[in-house]
Image (cartoon, rainbow, N blue to C red; front, top):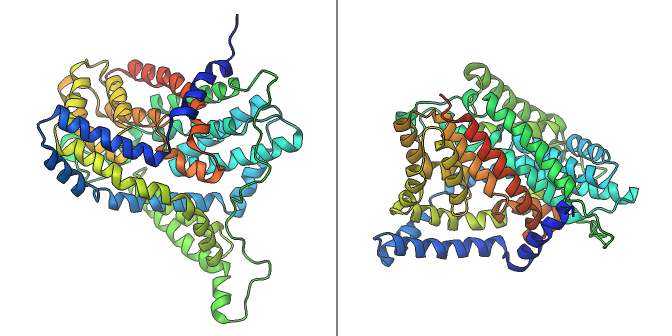
Length: 452
């Protein structure tokens, strides 16, 4: 008897809806688990562990600022008139239910390769747009599965333009430069094996999402009748130009000029340095493009205000994950954790074990940059001893991070804030994609081997 993919997904969906808490509760539970592991597996007394955790709460404050800018700028760019019009046009392309889920996954995946933040925002918007267009065509679309398809596309973000680990080791003066030197993105993000695997992954995720289309006669959940207004505050049709200050606020040339200035700076940057990317460069790219495409300075401010609602839950959780990271790195816990994987490795399998290690640690440190800071020294030292090319372990840890994002609800927050769902509504479907991408990422790294 042939069992359909959506039938296989139902136990995962039921489990998640019953047992998955809100992502903030998830962070609190992980904090407790990390305390228990620290006290139980290391020689750190409880009082000292509390001191390490408390001091560590502020550890990611500079990074939080960068992440906040990334979300604001990507969200604002995605809501400019030109980008929204393009998304609305693209949302009308699917002609059937399976095509709808596959198309949402592809658009979100391509957006995620450009930037993780853009992938989340564009994924939510294309899911909403496809749901709207599908309703007018009479398609019986399952709205949570559409949103899950958008989040599933996010699984490739570390293979693209905003990969934290790859950008970290490509930045001159990075903390591990004495060990590895500067590793250009041509050896990580733009390596042929990484690009090939990224394309294969997007295709596979799209096929899986299409196969999850409900096939029985039972009613399916369509998109909400009352749509959440995802648009920022619109600019008045007749802007107030009664004063000189108001005319400046609504003058397009001002926002275009400052945006063009940013893009000119980036042009000089790339001309002088080639494909040398940092998180700041990514942020300035989206800020410059957003300003150029905005109607006016005050319009761009309204776009940023609309983006602001996605930030609160994420910023709230970052100090707790910074505290978890401090417990992991300030005690022997991270070494016990990662050294166990390294001990199992050979030159041909170190990348694979880096992948598994990165996936496991991602539950405790759901930050690509922060996670690499924790695991990078361990796996790079192992790579030197075993004769493994450094880019293999860099991308191995990165693949692990993006892989378990599928079942770690932290990064669903920006997408769900736009889509209007809880994490429990989509994570069951993401479990199925999680199993498929394990084969792709793990198998790909085993084929790459030592990379030598």
